[in-house]
Length: 117
Ligand code: 5GP
Ligand code: ZN
Image 1: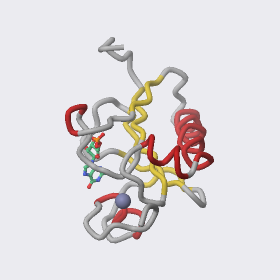
Image 2: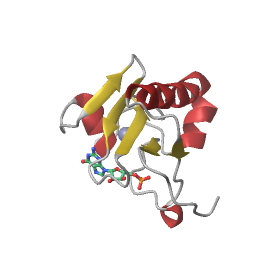
Image 3: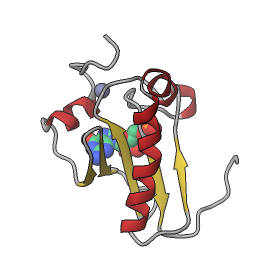
């Protein structure tokens, strides 16, 4: 069922505390933790505690939680002393999504290379 923990989902296991993570912020509905393979000096993932396969599915089912990913990303950036940052939602394997539990990447802490956008 949408929103239910999925037994084979890495991020559901992090939410459950079954896999350790370097958590930087928690709210009732979200967790923010450092990416295990950082692509910038600050690389934090903000995820909902509930399982949805991608950001659009989360926003359709639980828009307030989807919005909270953005406000929490802003809070993490502020806590890290970063004013310039990039938020990325990879959706689909062809776009680089490897974990099919909604998440936003917060990247910053150095000038970011201009990419596709
Ligand atoms: P995606 O490619 O799905 O947009 O992002 C998944 C991210 O999860 C990747 O950047 C990857 O480095 C990160 N990741 C994968 N496994 C782990 C893990 O066990 N712990 C943490 N903290 N991050 C992980
Ligand atoms: Zn999950």
